Image (tube, rainbow, N blue to C red; front, side, top):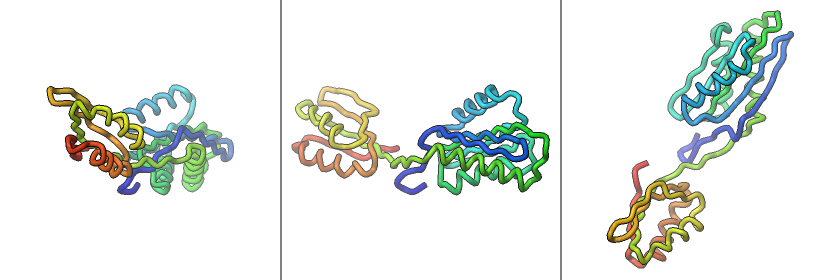
Amino acid sequence: MTGDGVLVPARDGRGDFEDRGSRFLGSVFRMPDEAAFVAALAGARAKHPKARHHCWAWRLESTHRFHDDGEPGGTAGRPMLQVLDSAGLVQAGVIVVRYFGGVKLGTGGLVRAYTAATQRALLDAGTLFLEARERWRVRLPFERLGLRAELEALCGGLVWTEAAFDEAGWTGTAELPVSASATLAELLVEHGGGAVSWEKAAS
């Protein structure tokens, strides 16, 4: 993660690993919040009710959690989280379901297996860089309302999250990538005719 954005899973990914009869089925996915992870874990348990373990880890921007689900402490959830950390990912969850093959793998074998399943799932998922976004409060008089469409066309990624009319004109909140903010300001100066006002809004 950098000051200009974050790295997240690009899509859902799957990765399997086998060792001495035990099967480890890994899945990596993007999760905007903890509630999304809870739903994904419930889905994994419903899909694999006969699996011996449903181990997991996740990381958001400011917090993380992991769980070994009955495996020896430190052999499953933590290694899975370390894979996410090493890749620099946030908004990322991983679940590895284990079907026990009848042979104990030892702590080293478990760490290798859960790490490998997570790595393979992450490789399948790929990564995506999400640029940081800013919010700008823009006020247009009625005679400049056409500027909204031009801003949308020329400021890549701009969306209006709030908008309202009053007796003097229109006010909207533009959310856009940081890299497009300079273009926004230039267009407002160039085409605003001195009648447009704007300011950075709280995130």
